[in-house]
Length: 78
Image (tube, rainbow, N blue to C red; front, side, top):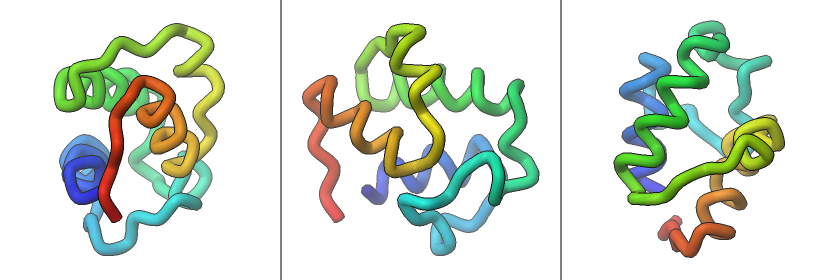
């Protein structure tokens, strides 16, 4: 989870300490559509995965990102 928090923190310019599964575009002012695209790219590079459009559109919060990464074989430690 630390690597995921690091990516989210860098892209969204927020503290990694406050990132939970419930963190979402509704709770983070800097998480707009442009940052969402940047986030997808950073996640794909960091975790060496490729997200489908369905994956991208299904994400509503950090918990969904974790589930999507897991679906692609990425196991995140707490």
